[in-house]
Length: 384
Ligand SMILES: Cc1cc2nc3c(=O)[nH]c(=O)nc-3n(C[C@H](O)[C@H](O)[C@H](O)COP(=O)(O)OP(=O)(O)OC[C@H]3O[C@@H](n4cnc5c(N)ncnc54)[C@H](O)[C@@H]3O)c2cc1C
Image 1 (cartoon, rainbow, N blue to C red):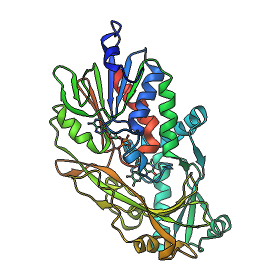
Image 2: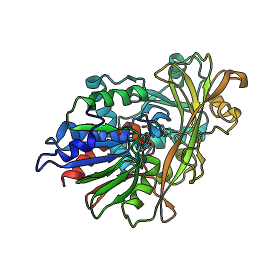
Image 3: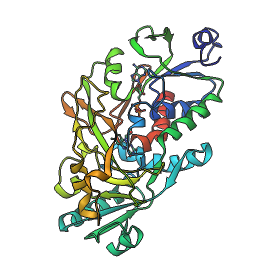
Image 4: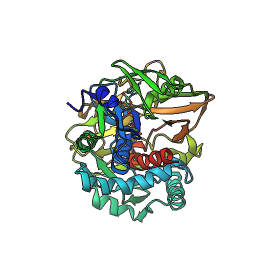
């Protein structure tokens, strides 16, 4: 009943109670709702999701890795919120029964240039304040993961974990349902915003707000423009495709040295740590993701077009026996909300308040890891 009669409840509001509306039922919108529900004075919180299911877009289409925060530029918002988010997610997982396993991850260098890149990565980690990488003799990696070839050099990231995103979303949804002042409304698409009057026009009804949070993922640029924002943001979807390795024996999370640390390049452009191989929480072994510039006009194009051999070739340098073509099959794809302003890639999370609206743009990887820290960050912005 609570979920259906939301407009009725809006009109029954107590004096002084404020209405906070969140657009977007992905992991970030849900995490903001949780943070506000647990810390505020009883304001009404509405979370609006255009789809019938929460987490239907980027949240349900990623690597599900709880990142350590080792590879992003040290003073970026991505690093700060990823490092905090890693710690907060482990705490939250215990409290809310979120499916999460601390796996650690091996990062392998297969030649001299990559070994040098691995050293640079280790220095980046120290500057970033993340849990340091642990250098190992390459034989240790083979002893731990018999499927690996002996690498040129390797390090272990102990704080990496593996999440089950569907279970994470369900756990937050269940948790939010216990708060009398929180309403999660599915199939409610925000069509336009009257920012002067603080009213949302949706496919279901008009909804007045005191504070609005734009956590619309791939569509956050469009919501920003709907709210009258003057900055020239554009989100271009960058597709990441995955293949499933049927009957693989590998149990671990294995990454290459991120290309930027080997070839140089602009740190702000990082949105992929390279094609890796991992066993997910549900037990499937996946190869991916690719990194393909998609079509702005179709942010929901999840077609897999990269041939499987590309993925096999990417992991072949560190696997004793990479899969053959008939051992892999298409799994799924997700789109990274890559943010550009005035045509220039930003490469970091962009979170700011304009009037009574908080906008979150460019929440690409490691947004899943950072989500609880983003929740805190946004709650602080609302209070100040
Ligand atoms: C290939 C790939 C791999 C990744 N791997 C990792 C990883 O291993 N670890 C990690 O930490 N991060 C990873 N990420 C990043 C992570 O998945 C995202 O940062 C995170 O899921 C973003 O969540 P979100 O809630 O911001 O966006 P979303 O999950 O996209 O949620 C936004 C929601 O807003 C809704 N919405 C949009 N417009 C409207 C509207 N007008 N009205 C109502 N609702 C609306 C959408 O339907 C959507 O459900 C990866 C991403 C990709 C694509």
